Length: 147
Image (tube, rainbow, N blue to C red; front, top):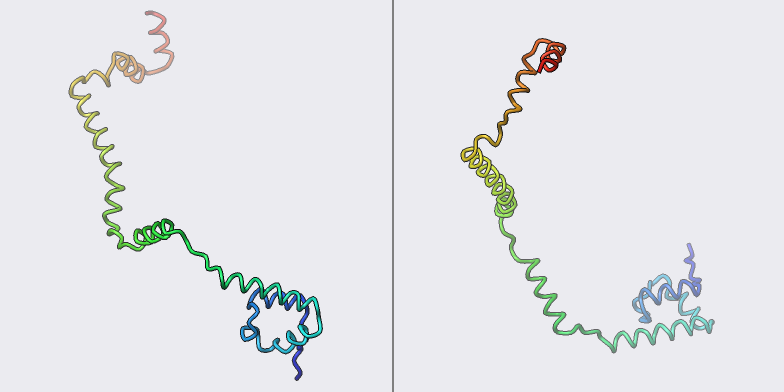
């Protein structure tokens, strides 16, 4: 069984993008094919040199975050990783506001009913009661015509 050691320029570009220019990081099965391609192709040598320049720039210039940003990230991490309050407390806090509103509305309704009992009742209620007690609609119509 023979291995296919032919490497194309496209595959060389993928390997350089993935593993960089350090040959020890390249897949062992493709190292021989890459070395052959680099010896025989000027395009492959150009790709390798461009990748080497990029590796050099990345290794020399280590990005550093501003200290204010680092402080904010660490502060947010402290908040996110802080022990959470028991779920019962959160559930209770969410329940208190609606219950307080319901209790207030109930107390207001009772107070208004005690202070002014005629708010709910009116004289029209008697007329509706008479209408519901009458035997027929025709009888109701006759009563209204006489008035």
